[in-house]
Structure formats: structure tokens, C-alpha cells
Length: 97
Image (cartoon, rainbow, N blue to C red; front, side):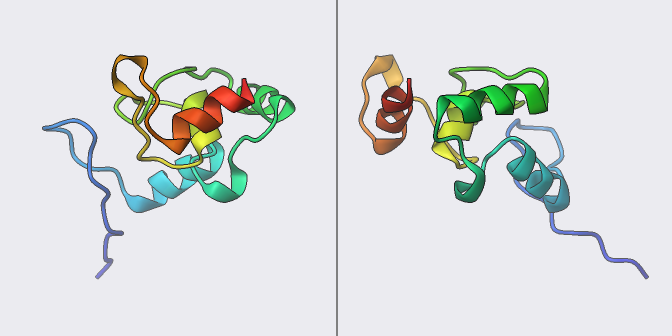
């Protein structure tokens, strides 16, 4: 009997979670990992060319590749409320701009 891979938590209520294998692939392709995060402008250009289309200032609450998440290098990133920077993620993004 085949065993299914563990599922990750879904971002939307009511939708089934995706298999971890898919999330790991997205981590690599969408640069949601510290090892492959975007650090320079040329990396950002390469990221857009690789994914074809990406949101710019969206966080983990929105599906799809995001330049903001790719610069932060994590899949659980949240944008600051009301434009107030309170953490190192948004500081890092603004420093890269």
C-alpha cells in the first residue's frame, strides 16, 4: 500500500492542503528558502525571467510567486500593517530597492 506524503497547511479555509513535495518545489522555484533568496537587483531580474510573472509587494496571504517573499527568503512572510516597518524582513526589502 502506498503512503501519501504529509500535507502542508492550506492558506485558505476550505481548500485542502497541498502535498509537501509541491510546497518544497515552490520554495525552490519561488525563492522561498534562505539559500536561494534574492539579494541583488540582477537576482530579481533572473527571478522574474524564471517564473514568468510575479507579484511585487505581496506576502504569504496571496497565492503565487512574490518578489517580496523571494527577497525575504521564507514562505511565511507578512507585510507590515499600514506601511509601518517593524521587522527585519521589510527593512531588508527596502534596503534592496
